[in-house]
Image (cartoon, rainbow, N blue to C red; front, side, top):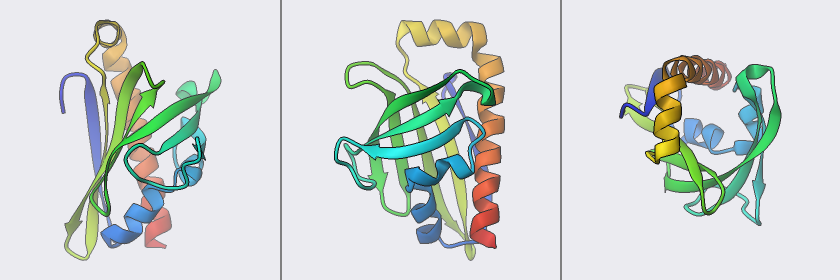
Amino acid sequence: MSGLGGEVSVHIEAPPKDVWALITDVTRIGEFSPETIAGKWTRGSTGPEVGASFAGQVKRNGVGPTYWSPCTVTKCVENELFEFAVGTDSVKLNNWGYRLEAEGAGTKVTEYFRLEPALPMRLYWMVLGRLRGRTNEKGMRATLEGMKKVLEA
């Protein structure tokens, strides 16, 4: 990953199609993420495809403030890659995604984030990046471990 992001990988004993179905159901993210407590498809979107819109309700650092973030699916390859940009139509702040790779009878799932390289985001990362990166990595691990628990049950 670039210097403006990070990633976490977990092996899940489930086929990629099952993992895909869970990670692309944005309405279930609140079950797993310590920061994104709810999700809903918006603007007439009903499922994962490039250009689809959804919103995530975020509770920053797990304690607040709480707000809705608009998201747009930017990459969508069934059973392989799901990525979305966070921000408005005109201003994207960061990108989040999941890469899936068949691994034995299961799936290696990598969740990642990448800030947009615009000057304000680069300055933010210079000042708070190390701390925010650790928080994001802990959150991604918690999210993936929660999904693993459900998928392997």
